[in-house]
Image (cartoon, rainbow, N blue to C red; front, side):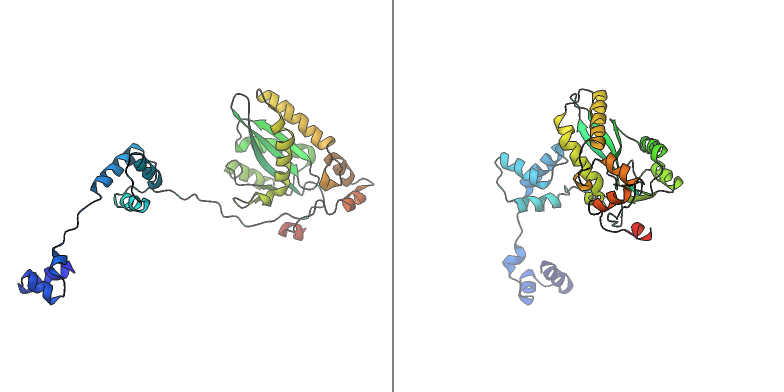
Length: 292
């Protein structure tokens, strides 16, 4: 409205009072000049933001309260944005993955499940355990322990497994940097292995290895204190041997994975082993299982 009054004054050379009377604007409202009560608060907010550049308006509001400046958080947010202090956060980009639920497995090497588990040594240094599990026999095919892994190291471990028991049809894994690297993707393409990357944030799509990881944490990692990397490798290797050879597995009718693998490998008891455990290793069908 003030702009309209000023336009009438300039266009028709009317006085201020007459222009206000024509536009039905009170002269007192036209003459009112708002006072900036936020100037001191804005200056202090800018000073705090320069001291703590990664603080948002909520933390800055707390700092102002500690200084005795009791002001509404909504007012702080308004001034915070007007002063151009709002932080710009980049939204994390995720890989677009289609859901491929677990399938019905009828033999070993149809699908391997792969994942990493983290732990800490007595020195405070982190270690990682690369777990590879057969989705049908529930065998632990490898438990490689080191402080870090690259895509080349992962494929080296998989080459050692394939040299002993052949290539799998598919490998199910998450979207870690080692498992989406060009080297790992090229390795799978060269060996004609179907890579099944689960959807980000949905570990239940790789339930076989997640179940194995929970057993590893409960029975080994949480009850062990690793002085160094070599001791961690020794203890974890001993636990893997016990898991495969001695530990009864509830989903395998309380047989060990080694016993179940031996019965299901083609011996005279192979058929009965599959019948006894038909419900223990069956999951939702996938396109791959339906095609087979």
